[in-house]
Length: 319
Image 1 (cartoon, rainbow, N blue to C red):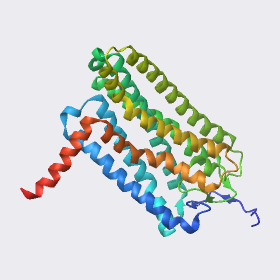
Image 2 (image 1 turned 120 degrees about the vertical axis):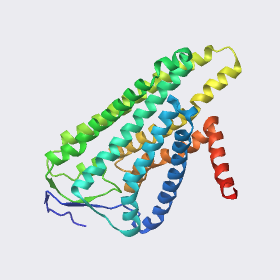
Image 3 (image 1 turned 135 degrees about the horizontal axis):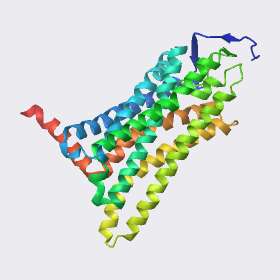
Protein backbone atom coordinates (compact mmCIF):
# COMPACT_ATOMS: atom_id res chain seq x y z
CA UNK A 1 0.00 0.00 0.00
CA UNK A 2 1.39 3.41 -0.95
CA UNK A 3 1.78 5.99 1.77
CA UNK A 4 -0.58 8.92 1.46
CA UNK A 5 0.75 12.49 1.48
CA UNK A 6 -2.58 13.84 2.70
CA UNK A 7 -2.42 15.92 5.88
CA UNK A 8 -5.41 16.15 8.20
CA UNK A 9 -5.63 19.55 9.89
CA UNK A 10 -7.71 19.81 13.08
CA UNK A 11 -9.53 16.51 12.43
CA UNK A 12 -12.94 16.11 13.96
CA UNK A 13 -12.71 12.33 14.26
CA UNK A 14 -10.19 9.55 14.72
CA UNK A 15 -10.67 5.94 13.68
CA UNK A 16 -9.71 3.23 16.16
CA UNK A 17 -8.66 -0.03 14.50
CA UNK A 18 -9.20 -2.30 17.50
CA UNK A 19 -6.57 -5.05 17.28
CA UNK A 20 -4.53 -4.51 14.07
CA UNK A 21 -3.48 -7.76 12.45
CA UNK A 22 -6.33 -9.75 13.95
CA UNK A 23 -9.25 -8.06 12.19
CA UNK A 24 -10.79 -11.38 11.15
CA UNK A 25 -10.85 -12.59 14.75
CA UNK A 26 -12.04 -9.40 16.43
CA UNK A 27 -15.55 -10.75 17.07
CA UNK A 28 -13.99 -13.60 19.04
CA UNK A 29 -11.55 -11.32 20.87
CA UNK A 30 -14.51 -9.35 22.19
CA UNK A 31 -15.85 -12.42 24.04
CA UNK A 32 -12.99 -12.75 26.58
CA UNK A 33 -13.08 -8.97 27.03
CA UNK A 34 -16.78 -9.15 27.90
CA UNK A 35 -16.22 -12.12 30.24
CA UNK A 36 -13.46 -10.15 31.97
CA UNK A 37 -15.88 -7.26 32.40
CA UNK A 38 -18.50 -9.53 34.01
CA UNK A 39 -15.91 -11.04 36.36
CA UNK A 40 -14.58 -7.61 37.31
CA UNK A 41 -18.11 -6.25 37.80
CA UNK A 42 -19.20 -9.11 40.08
CA UNK A 43 -15.89 -9.35 41.97
CA UNK A 44 -15.30 -5.65 42.62
CA UNK A 45 -18.96 -4.91 43.35
CA UNK A 46 -18.97 -7.74 45.89
CA UNK A 47 -15.79 -6.45 47.56
CA UNK A 48 -17.17 -2.90 47.74
CA UNK A 49 -20.58 -4.05 48.98
CA UNK A 50 -19.10 -6.27 51.72
CA UNK A 51 -16.84 -3.47 52.99
CA UNK A 52 -19.60 -0.84 52.77
CA UNK A 53 -22.12 -2.93 54.72
CA UNK A 54 -19.86 -4.13 57.53
CA UNK A 55 -18.74 -1.38 59.98
CA UNK A 56 -16.05 -3.73 61.35
CA UNK A 57 -14.31 -3.51 57.96
CA UNK A 58 -14.17 0.29 58.00
CA UNK A 59 -10.43 0.13 58.64
CA UNK A 60 -7.61 1.60 56.52
CA UNK A 61 -6.71 -1.69 54.80
CA UNK A 62 -10.28 -2.34 53.68
CA UNK A 63 -11.00 1.30 52.85
CA UNK A 64 -8.03 1.24 50.45
CA UNK A 65 -9.36 -2.04 49.04
CA UNK A 66 -12.79 -0.45 48.46
CA UNK A 67 -11.08 2.47 46.70
CA UNK A 68 -9.17 0.00 44.53
CA UNK A 69 -12.37 -1.88 43.64
CA UNK A 70 -14.14 1.37 42.69
CA UNK A 71 -11.21 2.49 40.54
CA UNK A 72 -11.06 -0.90 38.80
CA UNK A 73 -14.74 -0.68 37.87
CA UNK A 74 -14.20 2.83 36.48
CA UNK A 75 -11.34 1.57 34.28
CA UNK A 76 -13.66 -0.98 32.67
CA UNK A 77 -16.42 1.60 32.18
CA UNK A 78 -14.00 3.99 30.45
CA UNK A 79 -12.39 1.36 28.20
CA UNK A 80 -14.77 -1.46 27.44
CA UNK A 81 -17.91 0.11 25.89
CA UNK A 82 -15.96 1.63 23.00
CA UNK A 83 -13.67 -1.40 22.67
CA UNK A 84 -16.62 -3.79 22.34
CA UNK A 85 -18.32 -1.38 19.92
CA UNK A 86 -15.20 -1.61 17.73
CA UNK A 87 -14.74 -5.37 18.02
CA UNK A 88 -18.39 -6.42 17.66
CA UNK A 89 -20.14 -3.66 15.71
CA UNK A 90 -17.24 -2.01 13.82
CA UNK A 91 -18.13 1.40 15.29
CA UNK A 92 -14.57 2.64 14.94
CA UNK A 93 -14.99 6.42 14.75
CA UNK A 94 -14.44 8.51 17.87
CA UNK A 95 -14.80 12.27 18.08
CA UNK A 96 -11.46 14.05 18.59
CA UNK A 97 -12.33 15.67 21.91
CA UNK A 98 -13.95 12.47 23.17
CA UNK A 99 -10.73 10.66 22.28
CA UNK A 100 -8.71 13.12 24.36
CA UNK A 101 -11.18 12.76 27.21
CA UNK A 102 -10.86 8.97 27.14
CA UNK A 103 -7.07 9.36 27.09
CA UNK A 104 -7.22 11.53 30.20
CA UNK A 105 -9.41 9.13 32.16
CA UNK A 106 -7.43 6.03 31.15
CA UNK A 107 -4.12 7.49 32.29
CA UNK A 108 -5.61 9.20 35.36
CA UNK A 109 -7.25 5.99 36.58
CA UNK A 110 -4.05 4.02 35.96
CA UNK A 111 -2.01 6.59 37.94
CA UNK A 112 -4.61 6.63 40.73
CA UNK A 113 -4.47 2.84 40.92
CA UNK A 114 -0.71 3.02 41.41
CA UNK A 115 -1.25 5.61 44.15
CA UNK A 116 -3.70 3.30 45.96
CA UNK A 117 -1.17 0.45 45.81
CA UNK A 118 1.43 2.75 47.40
CA UNK A 119 -1.06 3.64 50.16
CA UNK A 120 -1.72 -0.07 50.77
CA UNK A 121 2.04 -0.66 51.09
CA UNK A 122 2.13 2.10 53.69
CA UNK A 123 -0.75 0.42 55.52
CA UNK A 124 1.14 -2.91 55.61
CA UNK A 125 4.30 -1.18 56.79
CA UNK A 126 2.60 0.57 59.72
CA UNK A 127 0.58 -2.54 60.65
CA UNK A 128 3.68 -4.77 60.87
CA UNK A 129 6.50 -2.40 61.81
CA UNK A 130 4.57 -0.06 64.14
CA UNK A 131 1.43 -1.96 65.22
CA UNK A 132 0.99 0.03 68.45
CA UNK A 133 0.87 3.30 66.49
CA UNK A 134 -1.43 1.98 63.75
CA UNK A 135 -4.61 3.80 64.80
CA UNK A 136 -2.68 6.93 65.75
CA UNK A 137 -0.96 7.17 62.35
CA UNK A 138 -3.70 6.01 59.96
CA UNK A 139 -6.42 8.34 61.15
CA UNK A 140 -9.46 9.21 58.97
CA UNK A 141 -7.91 12.63 58.29
CA UNK A 142 -4.65 10.97 57.18
CA UNK A 143 -6.53 8.57 54.88
CA UNK A 144 -8.44 11.49 53.36
CA UNK A 145 -5.16 13.32 52.78
CA UNK A 146 -3.67 10.29 51.04
CA UNK A 147 -6.75 9.96 48.81
CA UNK A 148 -6.64 13.67 47.88
CA UNK A 149 -2.92 13.54 47.07
CA UNK A 150 -3.40 10.40 44.93
CA UNK A 151 -6.27 12.04 43.01
CA UNK A 152 -4.39 15.34 42.52
CA UNK A 153 -1.28 13.56 41.27
CA UNK A 154 -3.29 11.44 38.84
CA UNK A 155 -5.22 14.46 37.53
CA UNK A 156 -2.19 16.73 37.16
CA UNK A 157 0.00 14.13 35.43
CA UNK A 158 -2.77 12.99 33.09
CA UNK A 159 -4.12 16.42 32.15
CA UNK A 160 -1.04 17.45 30.18
CA UNK A 161 -1.09 14.44 27.84
CA UNK A 162 -4.33 15.41 26.03
CA UNK A 163 -3.77 19.14 26.68
CA UNK A 164 -0.41 19.16 24.87
CA UNK A 165 -1.97 17.29 21.95
CA UNK A 166 -4.83 19.79 21.82
CA UNK A 167 -2.54 22.84 21.98
CA UNK A 168 0.52 21.71 20.01
CA UNK A 169 -0.54 19.13 17.44
CA UNK A 170 -2.88 20.41 14.75
CA UNK A 171 -1.87 18.34 11.73
CA UNK A 172 -1.81 14.57 11.39
CA UNK A 173 -0.61 12.37 8.55
CA UNK A 174 -3.43 9.95 9.38
CA UNK A 175 -6.52 9.83 11.57
CA UNK A 176 -6.36 6.03 11.95
CA UNK A 177 -5.19 5.08 15.45
CA UNK A 178 -3.73 1.57 15.52
CA UNK A 179 -5.20 0.82 18.92
CA UNK A 180 -8.41 -0.20 20.67
CA UNK A 181 -8.52 3.01 22.74
CA UNK A 182 -6.99 6.48 22.61
CA UNK A 183 -3.57 5.66 24.03
CA UNK A 184 -1.27 8.68 24.28
CA UNK A 185 1.66 7.54 22.15
CA UNK A 186 -0.58 5.90 19.55
CA UNK A 187 -2.13 9.32 18.87
CA UNK A 188 1.12 11.34 19.15
CA UNK A 189 2.81 9.13 16.52
CA UNK A 190 0.28 10.34 13.94
CA UNK A 191 1.32 13.99 14.27
CA UNK A 192 3.01 15.84 11.42
CA UNK A 193 4.47 18.56 13.66
CA UNK A 194 7.41 18.11 16.00
CA UNK A 195 6.06 15.94 18.82
CA UNK A 196 9.22 15.66 20.92
CA UNK A 197 7.68 17.66 23.78
CA UNK A 198 4.66 15.34 23.84
CA UNK A 199 6.85 12.24 23.71
CA UNK A 200 9.16 13.52 26.42
CA UNK A 201 6.30 14.43 28.73
CA UNK A 202 4.61 11.06 28.23
CA UNK A 203 7.85 9.25 29.01
CA UNK A 204 8.57 11.47 32.03
CA UNK A 205 5.06 11.00 33.45
CA UNK A 206 5.22 7.21 33.15
CA UNK A 207 8.72 6.96 34.59
CA UNK A 208 7.93 9.31 37.47
CA UNK A 209 4.91 7.25 38.48
CA UNK A 210 6.60 3.88 38.04
CA UNK A 211 9.94 4.90 39.54
CA UNK A 212 8.53 6.75 42.56
CA UNK A 213 5.87 4.18 43.32
CA UNK A 214 8.03 1.09 42.84
CA UNK A 215 10.82 2.69 44.91
CA UNK A 216 8.42 3.51 47.78
CA UNK A 217 6.76 0.09 47.69
CA UNK A 218 10.13 -1.70 47.53
CA UNK A 219 11.48 0.31 50.48
CA UNK A 220 8.31 -0.43 52.47
CA UNK A 221 8.58 -4.17 51.90
CA UNK A 222 12.29 -4.29 52.68
CA UNK A 223 11.48 -2.78 56.08
CA UNK A 224 8.48 -5.11 56.46
CA UNK A 225 10.52 -8.25 55.75
CA UNK A 226 13.25 -7.08 58.12
CA UNK A 227 10.62 -6.67 60.83
CA UNK A 228 9.11 -10.08 60.04
CA UNK A 229 12.50 -11.82 60.33
CA UNK A 230 12.94 -10.34 63.78
CA UNK A 231 9.69 -11.90 65.04
CA UNK A 232 10.31 -14.81 67.41
CA UNK A 233 7.28 -17.06 66.81
CA UNK A 234 6.69 -18.95 63.57
CA UNK A 235 2.93 -18.27 63.72
CA UNK A 236 3.57 -14.54 64.06
CA UNK A 237 5.81 -14.61 60.97
CA UNK A 238 3.24 -16.54 58.93
CA UNK A 239 0.45 -14.18 60.00
CA UNK A 240 2.52 -11.11 59.10
CA UNK A 241 3.41 -12.52 55.68
CA UNK A 242 -0.22 -13.51 54.98
CA UNK A 243 -1.27 -9.94 55.74
CA UNK A 244 0.73 -8.71 52.75
CA UNK A 245 0.49 -11.66 50.33
CA UNK A 246 -2.58 -10.43 48.44
CA UNK A 247 -1.16 -6.92 48.14
CA UNK A 248 2.21 -8.19 46.87
CA UNK A 249 0.43 -10.36 44.27
CA UNK A 250 -1.54 -7.40 42.88
CA UNK A 251 1.52 -5.12 42.90
CA UNK A 252 3.65 -7.62 40.97
CA UNK A 253 0.85 -8.29 38.47
CA UNK A 254 0.00 -4.61 37.90
CA UNK A 255 3.50 -3.20 37.57
CA UNK A 256 4.95 -6.13 35.61
CA UNK A 257 2.17 -5.94 32.99
CA UNK A 258 2.51 -2.13 32.85
CA UNK A 259 6.28 -2.31 32.36
CA UNK A 260 6.00 -5.05 29.72
CA UNK A 261 3.47 -2.92 27.84
CA UNK A 262 5.58 0.22 28.16
CA UNK A 263 8.82 -1.46 27.04
CA UNK A 264 7.14 -3.28 24.15
CA UNK A 265 5.52 -0.04 22.95
CA UNK A 266 8.73 2.01 23.19
CA UNK A 267 11.38 -0.48 22.14
CA UNK A 268 9.65 -3.51 20.64
CA UNK A 269 9.73 -2.26 17.06
CA UNK A 270 9.79 -5.79 15.68
CA UNK A 271 6.92 -6.99 17.86
CA UNK A 272 3.63 -7.56 16.01
CA UNK A 273 1.14 -4.68 16.48
CA UNK A 274 -1.53 -6.92 18.01
CA UNK A 275 0.94 -7.88 20.79
CA UNK A 276 1.26 -4.18 21.71
CA UNK A 277 -2.52 -3.83 21.84
CA UNK A 278 -3.08 -6.98 23.88
CA UNK A 279 -0.40 -5.94 26.39
CA UNK A 280 -1.81 -2.40 26.61
CA UNK A 281 -5.26 -3.80 27.38
CA UNK A 282 -3.94 -6.48 29.72
CA UNK A 283 -2.18 -4.13 32.13
CA UNK A 284 -5.42 -2.16 32.51
CA UNK A 285 -8.00 -4.98 32.48
CA UNK A 286 -6.33 -8.03 34.04
CA UNK A 287 -5.61 -6.59 37.55
CA UNK A 288 -9.27 -5.55 38.09
CA UNK A 289 -10.32 -9.14 37.32
CA UNK A 290 -7.65 -10.82 39.45
CA UNK A 291 -7.66 -8.40 42.42
CA UNK A 292 -11.05 -9.36 43.95
CA UNK A 293 -10.31 -13.06 43.46
CA UNK A 294 -6.96 -12.75 45.27
CA UNK A 295 -8.44 -10.79 48.17
CA UNK A 296 -11.42 -13.11 48.50
CA UNK A 297 -9.02 -16.07 48.72
CA UNK A 298 -6.24 -14.54 50.82
CA UNK A 299 -8.11 -12.16 53.16
CA UNK A 300 -10.08 -14.32 55.61
CA UNK A 301 -12.26 -11.42 56.80
CA UNK A 302 -13.35 -10.70 53.23
CA UNK A 303 -13.75 -14.40 52.44
CA UNK A 304 -16.02 -15.04 55.44
CA UNK A 305 -18.22 -12.05 54.71
CA UNK A 306 -18.50 -12.88 51.00
CA UNK A 307 -19.62 -16.43 51.87
CA UNK A 308 -22.09 -15.00 54.40
CA UNK A 309 -23.42 -12.51 51.85
CA UNK A 310 -24.10 -15.15 49.19
CA UNK A 311 -25.49 -17.60 51.75
CA UNK A 312 -27.93 -14.90 52.86
CA UNK A 313 -28.92 -14.21 49.25
CA UNK A 314 -29.67 -17.90 48.69
CA UNK A 315 -31.73 -18.23 51.87
CA UNK A 316 -33.66 -14.97 51.40
CA UNK A 317 -36.29 -16.24 48.87
CA UNK A 318 -37.31 -19.02 51.27
CA UNK A 319 -38.37 -16.63 54.00
